[in-house]
Figure 1 (cartoon, rainbow, N blue to C red):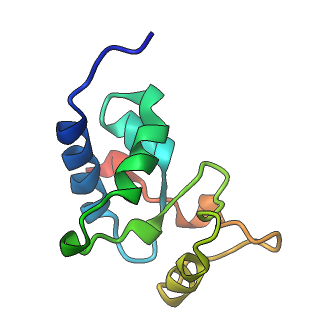
Figure 2 (cartoon, rainbow, N blue to C red; figure 1 turned 90 degrees about the vertical axis):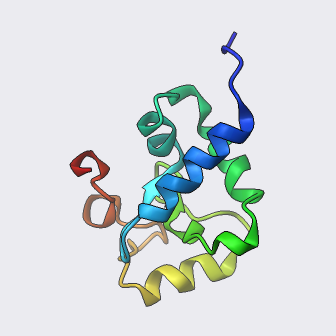
Figure 3 (tube, one colour; figure 1 turned 90 degrees about the horizontal axis):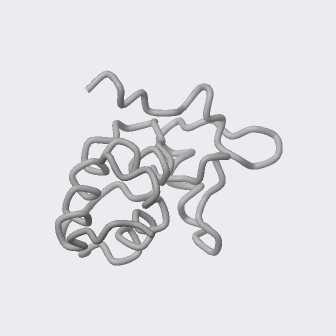
Length: 106
């Protein structure tokens, strides 16, 4: 069983990480959870991004799944990433080897 966490604090931490993702780079939900010291909370990262207040103007489109897949049903996400220079592989997934944000450099 996962220990109880403060959801509001976790969401704020997720938003702080997302705000730092550079133009033309992506990161996965799981990598954000790992960065926050909560590797088992990748689904909660997704929930935080679905509930992000619009006034924060975060680059949520730069978060993809571990395989580089964009969010289902969010057609604009791929368009936004392409406009930033993110490279997609033939199968339609982000080329994570070339476009992943190396947050370890923080």
